[in-house]
Length: 380
Ligand code: MG
Image (cartoon, rainbow, N blue to C red):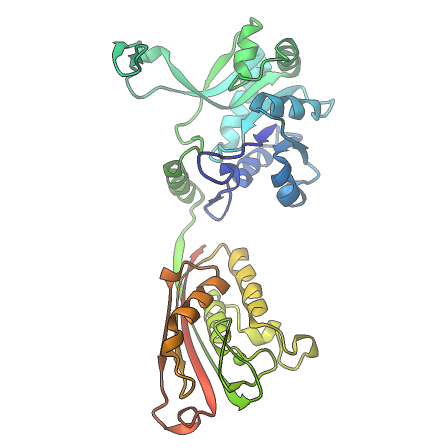
C-alpha cells in the first residue's frame, strides 16, 4: 500500500507529484514496488484531485487506485479495505520516499513474515538533545545508540495490522500505523535500511534525492543546442503575428498557418536540439487541416515532445530581421509572449532585431526573417 494522499502544504504542491529526475516522486516509489517480484499487488492511495489527474496513468493490472482519507491513518484504512483477499503480508509505504529499493522492501517483508511486524529504519547519526518546556534549553542527552529513525516500508502480517486498525479505529493522530501495532502489545522489529531512503519534505530533500537517483540510475545530464530559421512574405491584408502576439501593422505574414516566423524558428530550434526533425513534419503546409492554425498549437506539440524526452529548455535566443515594422518598441511585449508560449521564465528568453539595411527582399520590406537558438538539458 503506497500512501500518497498528502496535500503538500510545506512545499506548495503535493510533494509526491513534484518532478524528480524526470518523473514524479510517486512514480519512483511505485517503480520500486513493481520491481519487487514478491509484491503481488499495489494499492495506491491518492487525493481526490490527484486521482483525476493521475489515476489512468498509474493504474494497471498490478496497481489499483483508492481515494485518501482525511488523515494519514484514514488513508491507511481506505487502502487496507481495498487489499486483495489473498494478501498475507502488507507493506505500508510513504509515496514521498522515492528512493526505497526492492532490497529494502524484501528485507522488511521477510522480517514481518517471520515476526509479525517490522519497520525499515536507520540508527540516528546526530547526538540527540532533549529540550525543556521552554523549548530552548537542553535538559538531557539521551543515549543515541538506542534511537532509530523510522522509515517506510512498515510491514505486517495482515491480521496484525487489521487488529491495530480495528482496535484504534478512532485514532486519527498517529503518524504511522506501527505505533498502533505497538500499543496492541506486538513487538515491532527494526530492519536496517538505508540513509538514502529519505522522505521528501523540504526543497533540499528534493535536491539530495535527485543527486542520489541520478547516481544510482546512472542518469546523465546532457546539454544540446538547436538552431532554427524561418522566412515569410510580408503582405497587405493579413494580421501580423510575431512570437505569439499580434502587432499592429498594415501588413502581415503570409503563410499556411498564422505565419508567425518567430514561433516557427524557435520551435524548429527546440526540435533541432532534440534531433526530432522540423515542425513541417507534424504540420505539413499542404495539409488543409492546419490552414490558418495558431502557431502556439505548433509550440504545444513541440513542448509535448520536450516533456516526453525528459528534457528541459534552458534558454531561447531569437533574432528577427525586419525592415518594417520597427521591432524595438515591441521588445518587451514580444519577449513576454515568447516566454509565455514556451512556458519559460522570461529570464531564459532573449529577443533582438536587425534591419536588412535596404539590401535584398528582406531589406526592401517584402519579408521577415527569424533565426533562433535553443539550449536544452536532456537526461540520457
Ligand atoms: Mg514558417
